[in-house]
Length: 166
Image 1: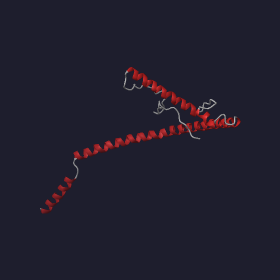
Image 2 (image 1 turned 45 degrees about the vertical axis):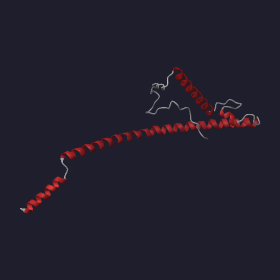
Image 3 (image 1 turned 90 degrees about the vertical axis):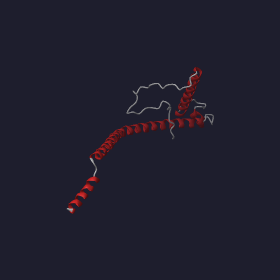
């Protein structure tokens, strides 16, 4: 009889140490939530793999445009160096490339510099107009169409250009 009581006590303690259905249901719900989060992350990761092709093609385009820029820059610099030699320093290469020289050359640097200057003046005019109207709050952004957007990549409206190094 004592052996039966001892056996029942050990089985009772074993059963009490096991999880009950309510605890198991809460653990199951938590694990199902984690699985759904992991599935979402997995689907997002698979999307990144398809973006890899887009990224590679974009890098290829950027590399080809940079190569064209280097070619244009080389031709322009060669011409300006020859002009500086022929004119014995009257035509200065650095000034011409900045857009302040004796020759008006539309180099990438001069175009970007001019566009930045234009946009700064435009922003100042907008600020002056807003202050003359008595408005202190910023203007609302206008909606832009996403017709030029591919794969969720949008251009920055404040981006003018990038100066490349040779």
